[in-house]
Image (tube, rainbow, N blue to C red; front, side, top):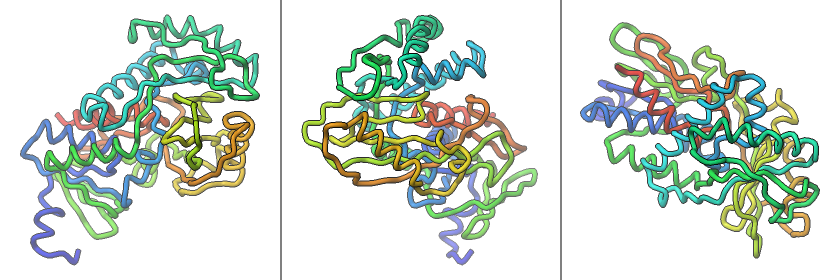
Length: 369
């Protein structure tokens, strides 16, 4: 590395802990490490100008699963496993709120709603709401799901939808900005535009090979989620999520977070705009990528949903499109484990980063005895 003595001493050597990834998990991990070891030297390496996965690119849903999502999970997981999944998501949301404060993340409790195109699908989910409420009652002490009329006048859907009374929404940008501020106030140093290309270790420390040269630490924590397969082998697959947002719409009365088709489509009101994302179920294989970008197939479907269901009688323009990279697998439970003597990982958040990120970050730091 072509750096001065001061730079090398301050940032690139004698590090106690390096966290790879400055998203929700990585920053929470760094904050927890500083809480546990106040005198430690903690560095976070981030390959982008901003967090590169989905932490600043998601829809800002403070959610833990719609009815159809949870029923789908019950096909591949036991009732106890699904309960524990929801519990972790709920605990993670409370950790996030307690750490940053609701005002700093623009937390709004406007409820969540699941819409259905097909009456049979609605009936199937509606008939299971009592079972889901019973399953989740020990956690929430109230019924989570209930029926709601189509009060927002969406078109081409069933007359009623299912409401989640505990779902809320946040401002994703404010959340990560406040996480960065909190981490830096505790003395965590965040270095951007540094890509970790590989690593090696001996008994006492880990050497990270990066685009700027070698960086070392005593312990390394990987919070790389959808990009993890580029560094080590675990049961995780990248999953791109495409999103668009409209220009401002006058008198936009839609309020809340909305799900369609097992959560594969989702939308909300933000700053009098509709933010709409999803559609990777149209082409799973193409969306198993770490490359950012949009496809005509999915973007066309998102626009069609706006025109036919969400804003059928409203003139609107698309002001912005983007994508984020999630980490998914054949199991929904996050992977939080020790990889080797001095390396750990907290990955596979399954599209639930806002809910799970704080808890996974804490659990990742707590792997260190």
